[in-house]
Amino acid sequence: MMHRREFLLSSIGAGIATLGVASTASETSSIRALLKQLVGKNDKVVGMIAITIDEDGPRAVTFGSTGVQDLTLDIDTVFEIASITKVLTSFLLADMVQRGEVAFDDPVAKYLPASLTLHERGRPITLLDLASYTSGLPIMPGNLPPQWWALPNPLADYTEDKLYEFLSSLVPEYEPGIHYEYTNLGFGLLGIALARRAEKSYEELLIERVCNPLGLSHTRITLSDNMRKHLAQPHNKAFEPTSLWDMPAMLGSGGVRSNARDLTVFLKACIGLQQGPFGKTLERLTETRTSTRLAGTQAALGWFITSTKDEEFVWKTGASGGCNSFIGYSTRNHRGAIVLSNFNWYSLDGNDINLGMRLINPHHQPIDFKAFYS
Image 1 (cartoon, rainbow, N blue to C red):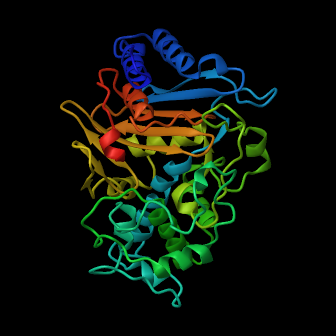
Image 2 (cartoon, rainbow, N blue to C red):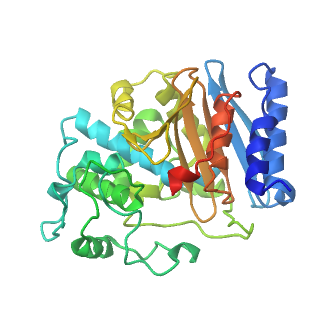
């Protein structure tokens, strides 16, 4: 019997294998069939939207439901983008470096309360260490409740003071700059440090430096009235409705909500399909590269970069309790993809990553990302 992992990986390969030569209508039909397969019989409560982007423009394909009566699933539907926020936080760092407001090698302690003592190993943790997943900090703070991820809105009461309390007692296992470790804690701390340097809230800084210049009117932490009207209902792995995640101490790690329309604008700028003021800043996000546990996949700033024989993908995923997301592009064929869903189908095997990569390059052979996450 074929295991679910093998089934999904093979489906991702077969479902859109003809995209490279297909007409737009055929491509749309193939993608929709794949989304239908992934959503399954739950299409009355959950759904997915996939965007492909190249020099001919963006194309959107949807299947399923927002989970909200009379709310159509389309490019204006708002989702939690979770850890895709890390790319935006890295963007903020690169922008502030470009402006001379901070330096990559600044110790993060320089921008934290003087009363906080970081027990650093070997040398101080820098802003670059935080953005490149090499800070030596763990994935999450150790003073969260047991199985916190199973709680409704589990980080809502986790404050900056609680984060500082944990950091004051932490001795990192690794010296900064030498060891890759995925860390939500590190990006939460980076967001705090940048906001304190700018003397603004993280959200104010994000809106001023990223959203307003790019015209991203529906990329926010605090939902506007219009965003709330277009908000999809999140669902957990059992397809049960669940709450949005609020994370006051970890905003730079995963606090942002957005829609496909805004993410398309951002991704076009990253690919170079849209002229704007951030060319050099965006380039800096992929200049620093650190090996991960999976051969061929490196950590950049916020992004990850996976290289195969014929392709180089720049990508990031996000998963909250009730949404899943992918954004990425090819540095070679200059094609990008976005996938958003209002249910959590994140998998350690990397099915969400492989789906995005196959949308970018129809000839992509699925990769088992288990070693990357282990």
